[in-house]
Image (cartoon, rainbow, N blue to C red; front, top):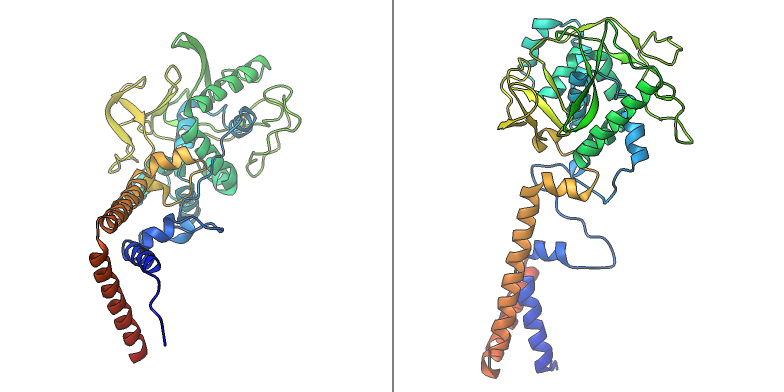
Length: 367
């Protein structure tokens, strides 16, 4: 003969049943336990692409190493590299596409790119295969560079200036037929600008980042660099391959005084994609605007640090917060209802719970 459970135990059972009936999926995600609990992956995102940010940040040594290979690029090209690096998966797609369509040049290339959905900065680099290939083959570097730029944009651009000053002091940064080096004052700070003598042609400098800045100031030289096929220059300065048609419309630059990247509204390759333009926010480039990262082009690639992940995943975070708040509200209501019941009402609830459990067991046995 079975005995009825104690009255207090039955009340606890009611509370458990009430809580389990409310948002079980949310409860499973918010309950602490001895093992980490995996959050359900949204339907629009694959498990492999789900962000898994950490609290990791970048030291000055990290920034020096990451920026050393590109700090001496012309400003317009450097700005495209920094923007594109925040979309590493699109860089890989574009590099593969460019390799398969290497015969496309100039206008034919622009026309072919109109059907691609990559960020404009990624599209622009298809005109400079040497750089796009480097970013694809050094994907670890590309990803870290993009994460550093998103997390510490001001520090990244200040690091570029410090590296340029070191190259200048070492005698390895000079005006030539491939590049124009200018020293100007912006925001009461002297900066070094590197420009293209011909806005429609870009020359990509090749150099050894371990020597071009003088004696490297850390115990190990920069681990990241890519030497293009046929590179044989052994000096400490810059070497240049043939110029690449860049197009005047792919104009952009860096507002060194404000530590901002500026983009040109009239970019041909950017036609049809204005998601990364903050309209009306004028900056140092005539007709230009401050660049803003577009998380849609990230395509699920994880952000390195929690602050950046939260900044660019506001929708997901808000949805999770709303679900937790909804659960907490229902749970609190359930506890309030239980506390206000008298003995007769509690007995009635227990009887209802018993009937529900019996029906559930009966259904299980009938299957």
